[in-house]
Amino acid sequence: MNRKWNIFYIRLTVIVVIAYMLFFQPDLIKYQYWAYAYVALFLLSNIIIFRLPDRFYSGKNFYYFLVFFDTGMIALGIFLSNQADMFFYLIYFFIIAIAAMSMNFKYMMLNITMFIFVYGFIMYNEGKFSGDMASLYALRLPFIFAVTLMFGYTMTRIFHELQKSIQDRDDKYFSLVESINSPVYMVDRNGRYLSVNDTLATEVKTAKEKLIGKYFSDFHRFNENRLFMKNVNQVFSTGNSVMFETYNPDQDKWTLRTMSPFKDREKEFVQAVSVVSKDTTERVKAEQKLRQAYEQLRQTQEQLIQKNKMEAVGRLSAGIAHQMRNPLEIILMGLDFLEKNIKDSGKTVGLSLEKIKKAVYRADRIVEDFLQFSKTTRFQLDPVDICPILREALDMVEHRARKMEIRTALNCPFSELRVMADKTTLQQVFINLMNNGLEAMQPGGILEVKVLNGRGEVDLQKRRDLKDNEQDFVIVQVIDQGQGIPREEMSQVFEPFYTSKGEVNGTGLGLSIANMIIERHGGKIEIESEEGQGSTFSIYVKKA
Image (tube, rainbow, N blue to C red; front, side, top):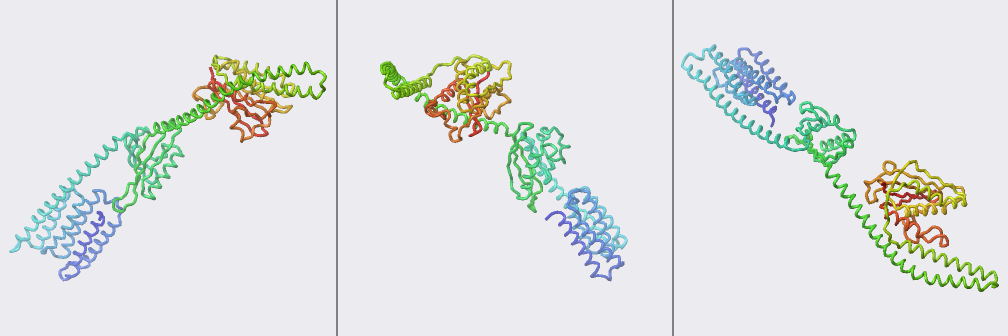
């Protein structure tokens, strides 16, 4: 039971006792109507005091006023009831209980001294201090004082011990909160700070005294405040703790907040929300780096597996190529002999020999590609200017482009843009990709070659598979207006023997060799293509 109810019941008991003395012994009352008005006033004051808000009961001045008011009312009741000769003064001990709630020994004793003076004056006027009973009446005054002294001293000591215990607990709590190297604070339903520790005050660069009463939204972004208030409302509605993480892009900072309800012990409703904020930026970034490292490790593993496969195919193809070269040379020699010695065999035989010779040449070209594919020559990487290499490559395919009625365009807006490359092999890659683009196009199109400076012009996310994505890269794009590559075949483009030209026009080793060369340069080739929209080959080469 709280103080309000205690005061209400104690005063109500006093009022009932006084009313009993006044109304059930009317022959002793000198001023009957005044007595009725007195009881009504006392009862009305009790109702008014009970209706006051709880905050009044937490202040000492309220108890001082109440004790002095009730002391006067008790003295007036004794006078009106004409009961000074009886033990009616014992009602005052109810007032002592109220005085004890103020927990101030000095004011309690001042109050009892005033009561003894008033009560003694009433008995004196009624002649109680003369006659045979004078000593007994006189003893009432020190008896009241002694009992009040004992009661007041006891209650004061109890209060001081309790106050000391509470203060010790508060000091420990305050020391614990201040020792935490993270912001700890309490907010109300509107996100207003009710209490804060020094760490939060330092973080927001505001004195603790000025911070109290301000709102969370005064120091944080809109989105962060919206998420904060959403969780505050959840704690108020459910009474359960919540934990959530937020990111501040202005400070590049991750924060983990733990919210717990602060409940009223008696009514069990949430009065406020306590918050502990912990900077988790290092942990989150470490997790992100770990995920990136894992992804790079997985991709490297796949690349190593693919590299081992390609090396095995290379060794196998080299052996097969050398074994096939000798029979092919014998076949070509036989064809030459037949052409020289069968002169009048007719047109049909001549056409047949020509077809056989073309087939042999095609087989020889395949063997040559096999040998090129299987080479493991160590490149010599030197700083070279990329734009002249591209101009020379375009010059080499320009004649073929004009015959096919296809225009070419080079967009290299840099006076000098140097890369680390083996000039000859890198130029072979560009020529191969340009020829592929020409073969995929119809007359009237444009084959465009574009050079981009890696940083800023290409999203870093598109370079996540490169061996060192912190480096700058030069990106060369070969853009054709051909028929494009079907989506289901995109993953097969760099596989050996894949070709979209048909068996007569290609072996399917050109792109595999080009990809192998770029990988040896520490770069990669990416493809963007849609059927009917053309293709874009992006070659990433490290800047010098």
